[in-house]
Image (cartoon, rainbow, N blue to C red; front, side, top):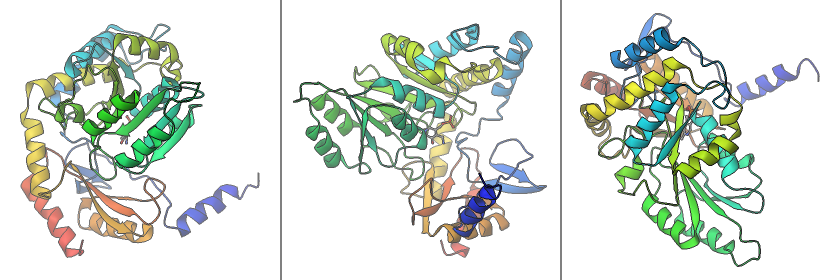
Length: 381
Ligand code: PMP
C-alpha cells in the first residue's frame, strides 16, 4: 500500500465536505457543554432526560467501584458474570414486562450480535431502509438474504414478504428488523401494522428501541408501550440502549427465557467480549430506578419537545439542508452563536439529504430553547 493512501482518501473526503474530526468537551454531559473554555447549548446529545450526570447515577457507580472494583475481568461465560449483571437484567425484564433480559456491551454490539444469529442461511431478513448502521451490519453478518423495504412502506414490506412466503420446500424463516424511532429523522415505525404483517406471514419482529427507551410510553418503556403492544407477544424481540435516555452505557435485549438462553449460546458479540464493568451496571440500574420513580423527567422532556416544535413526534428534530458542505457551514454558524447542533452527512444519511439534527433534552431551559429558535430564524432555517 502506498504511504500516501490515507492522505489521498482524507483529501477526497475533505473535498466532498465529508471529512470528520473530533470535538472534545471539558464539562460533564448536560444541556450545556464546554468546548475550548466556551459554553455551548447542547442540541446534539441522546442524553434526553439529562441524567448522565445525575447524582443518583454517580453515587451508584462510585459505590459499585468501592465494592466490586473497576473491571469485570472476563466475558460473561467465563468469570465476568457478576451479581450486578443479574440484578440489572432482572430489573430490565421487570421494567419491560418480559420473561428475561440480557445485557450487551453497547447497542451496536447488541444489534450486530443478535441479528447475526436470529435467522441463518436460506432465511430472509426484511429491513427498513433507514435502519441504524448497527442493524445493517448485523444483517451483513447473517447468511440470510436481506430484503430492504422502503422507509415505513408497509405495502412494500408486504410485497416482499408475499414474494418470499413459505410456498417453497425450504420453509425459510422471516425476520423483520426496524428502529422504533428513526435516529436521523425522529419519526416512528408503524409498529401495530408491522405486528399484523408479522402475524400474517409468521415473521419474528426485532425492534430497536435505542431512542424509544425512557422517552415513549406511559412508563418510559418505549414505543412498544406507546402503541399498547404486549411485551409478551411471542413474535416480538426488543432491544434498547442504556447510553441514551438512561444516561449510562450498554444495551439490553429482552423477550422469552428461551430467546435469552439462545443468545447466551449464539450471540458472538456477547460471548467473545469482556463484560460491562460494575460502575456502568450500577449506573444503569440507578437510571431504571430513577425512571420508575420520577415521571416528571419524561413529562418535562415532552413539554420541551412541544415547545421547540409543536408538531414534533420525538425529541429528534432534523432540519434538512441537502448539501453536505452547506450543512457543515450552517452547523458551524450555529456553533459560533453558542449552539451545538450536529451536521449529519453521508454515509450516516443518503446523498443529498444532509441535515442538522437537533435533539431536545428535559434539562433545557425555556431560555435555551428560545436562543436556539432565534438562531435558527436568524440563519433562515
Ligand atoms: N441503534 C440506534 C437506532 C442508534 O441510534 C444507536 C446509537 N446511535 C445504536 C443502535 C447503537 O447504540 P450504542 O451507542 O449503545 O452502541
